[in-house]
Length: 336
Image (cartoon, rainbow, N blue to C red; front, side, top):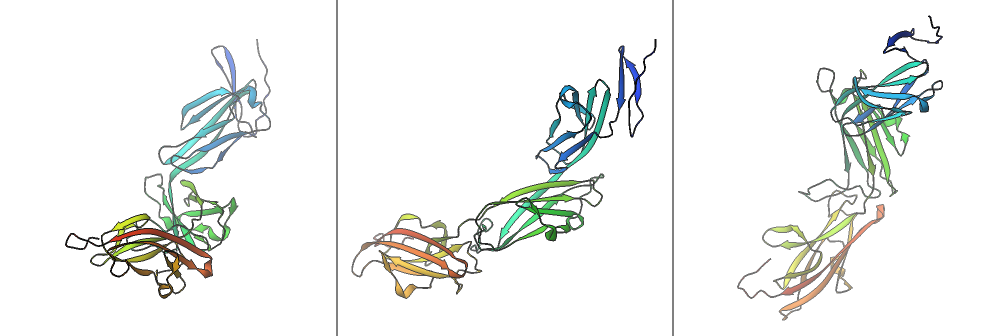
């Protein structure tokens, strides 16, 4: 008894064999492909692999997904598979589609690596500031891609030999992309809307790659008040916020700007306006320091102090205020 089968295959000849009394036909469909989005990802991120075909009835077929030869999923009509690599390297994903006409297969590769993105703003921060300057409106900066990719032998690729493809807000930045272009310049724009910046890094041989993204948001500049200790200088560990009590009749204050588009707090572009108990201190205009004390012959007093920092050219401004309780030290020494 003979059976006659007809199967059209473009790239491979069909292979018929018996298995447990059932005739199986293994073939590769000409239009069956796998689409990975993205094909290069960072370790811990996810890629979605989707079957694309116009001939096969995927909803009624059993689809078996495997990664590097290991079966991960087998279900009816499962046309999508999510891969989340935990280690760097290349992952070969295979989809086997079982239909009454035979078993059709397609493969694709997804590479995973580490890709760090470091955002840096050109705004001002004081010395010994623990952190990076936040990106304020109308202040430029940059994003640096730091790839951690290795070749088939485990050797790391040099950052200068990799290809970088940058995108912002969903639009490709062709002029900023290319070999060794690991830094993206951020324009000094006044837009405060959040925008996503992404980059895909690939090796010259196409073996390794990774992608990452971050949301580029802008923060308002700030100004903080600090006590100026006559012995130790600025008390950086204690910003004056709210009510403060000091055991002295007189103290010095200093206003320190954060994230403004200046290179130093005494920049001529930055203007300071001080107020004490609601009155503008005219002789302190423009200075970032102020001396505050109790009225003469009074042992204690209260001072509501505020300062506004204004950078007119960039439409930047910030305000800080504090309530100081000053009292004469009766312990035999000055306490700060």
